[in-house]
Length: 40
Length: 528
Image 1 (cartoon, one colour):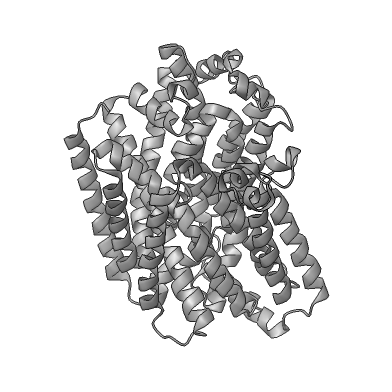
Image 2 (image 1 turned 90 degrees about the vertical axis):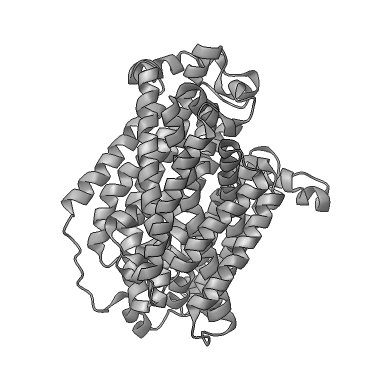
């Protein structure tokens, strides 16, 4: 896959792209969550 | 170098003017101790994310680790995966939110203070402070060497002068503007780094004929692995090394796990979670932080590995040979030889930004660790009112130590010093930091025991067992007549793999055997 034979490597390649996309999705979904609610 | 010095000089000058402007903004906005230490707890999520990422990624992460990928191959991408999942997602969502809320409730302004107040122990704060104050200059010294070498080669300035110029510029805005100046300048530097790395990836894939084609060409080169590396377990640049071989241990234990997990307990990064107002800012920061780190480490490792294809096509040799055996030169060689002139300027700026952004946070953290945590809180029991002034004096002192180290340390120690600091932080701080946030039953005694066990096991393993550091330091040889006390595979196992679990076990056992922290204090930390 992707010109890489060893699954341990292409898995890492794909995972780092997907985890970054995961971060984008998380941030977008939780964009307005966790507004200041605590006392100082 | 292909680009003329005047052009680069002008670009660097414009960049420095912008840095000074941002430093001045930081100075203007700093009025209280809380502003100087944690940005008044109201930093913007974008600034938090980029500043965290830019601090995290130093020149050595791009050049040193990118070069390591040139030698070892794409197995390093597992570190990129760790950097994103552990270093960003877990750090912000799990650790960051609790750190922010407990830090606010306890009024902590530094990482050691957060731990000290959570466990009601001045010793924890003082010892953490001194540990950071002693060992962070080593890490800062390394970053300084990397930055100064860049200034030396690109602007044709003497190395010794380059160290001084770089130190004075960064120290000026860190001392006057505190963390606000640090984070504002980080944001600009981070943006430059993002741009530089994005171009680097795109141009590399275009040059090598496309994504799949480039990878395939690298896969086909497996037969070119030099004899010495093949013996160590190297199977090619798109394969993992042989399981359990020396290269596998180095890759998995030191690079992927050591650096990948070590990041969670980095004081200069953890303090950033206390610079924002609410969890919303942390959620939003994840959106920026994930892709940012992908563009840093992910790109450095991919391009580092693919440089082999370029050098083989052009010169008929692999990257390590093209860089004359010095893996730190793989990335600079590749950039100078393969990239267009204009990009060389941008990339040089990227590297300067990477060095300065890491350096500024290190200066700030070392100074606050010694000035605030160790001197003011531990030695003087919090009696001196003006924390900021003490810190402002402590920053130049710790900087001087870093500069001295930058002159003394041999160049061969560059890659190891980063790993030493990461490993030491993970073993000493991670169990007690995790316990502070998530385990109410963890006691002060448990925390102290785990910190001491972690720190001393880690140092012992570094100096007497792990060949990579024990051999160059030579203390084991001098005392016991043996290069390392344990042989075989043990000599390749990173300290973090041994010291961190040991510190975790100590934390749990000692906590269960000692008296819990009073309920009222727990309610103060976590709310009712």
